[in-house]
Length: 298
Image 1 (cartoon, one colour):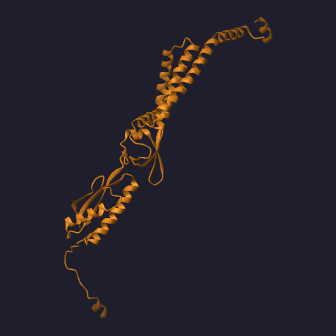
Image 2 (cartoon, rainbow, N blue to C red):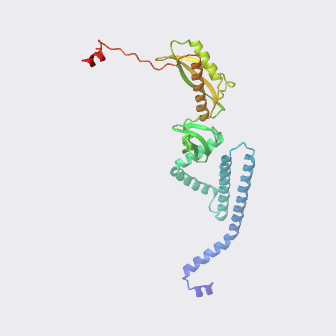
Image 3 (spheres, rainbow, N blue to C red):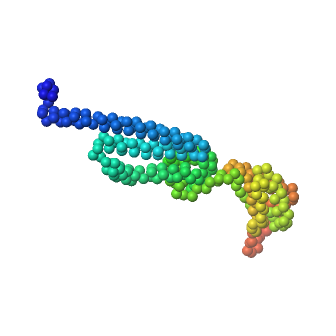
């Protein structure tokens, strides 16, 4: 080492420090080798865990996004444990307890900084696990309504009926009420139809019911239609007509179109009037009437 000092011409304190580092590095080589082996084994275990989760989820019982989330969580946990073990091997003075304490304090700070992100992350996991709705379902939440195109760990993509894409944070879907319109294959819908006061109510009900049952999109095999006299309107007896059809919005609109056309046609054929609104005007005092022809002759 004296020859090295003569060649490099370093000050004695610096040379001693370098020598100390060299000795420490040589002493740490076996520990570094063990730590490297631990990290390699950690990567192997993480890869095996991903394969096992993918195989378990390949049966179709779990969503693809949920499989990816489970793979991410398992890989993160395995790498965290392996890294802590490797760290304690390289630096024996760092115990797992101290490392976890430091990691916990750092996690608290990160959690406060990224509160909304973690909230959406956890909400996404719960949505994927609970499966309140699936891709392809038509849902409504607050002012957003449309078809679910994808569910990610942070947000859900909803395609509205007008073609616009809305990206909704998962926390919003988790905390608020969500209406799943396509939870079942069939859904009930209704319209109001009025007939004139001078018509026979029972006859009108039978004509309407027969017309609605004949519509192709009305699923009276699921549940029978219902026609009830609902109220005395301003100029008509109002009937509430309810039936079952497909649960998609386009099915609702198409079936209403067919039912309205069928009811109108059936009432016209039966001679039952669908009245226009009537207005009765009451005038206080006499109204002067002029003879137009006599006035023109003058």
